[in-house]
Image (cartoon, rainbow, N blue to C red; front, top):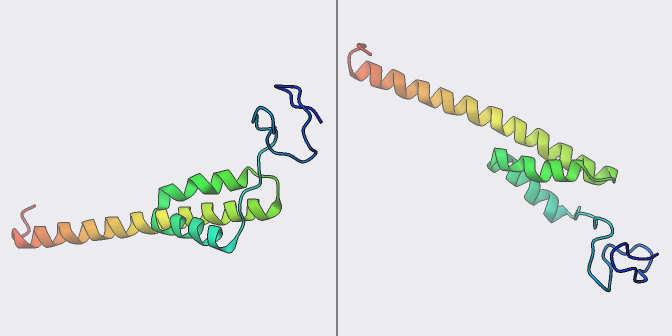
Length: 106
């Protein structure tokens, strides 16, 4: 196999050209337990940020990477819905408390 940029010989299965450093293929993403835990925690604790690794993993080729991505996206969506619901419930509670303290005039 030859590099499309420098025409140097590249070993089969290489992700980068050893001569010029051009990326030839995307390296596989980590699917270790720690990485999965980090992605899922990010999806639950910081809902919008969980979409970034979710989409990144869904776009990959292997079924394991796609599964990690879809789980992260589902967790992010659920966490966002729950966060919004709790925020509006808390806001409604504060508005009712303030309204009652002013004698219901608001």
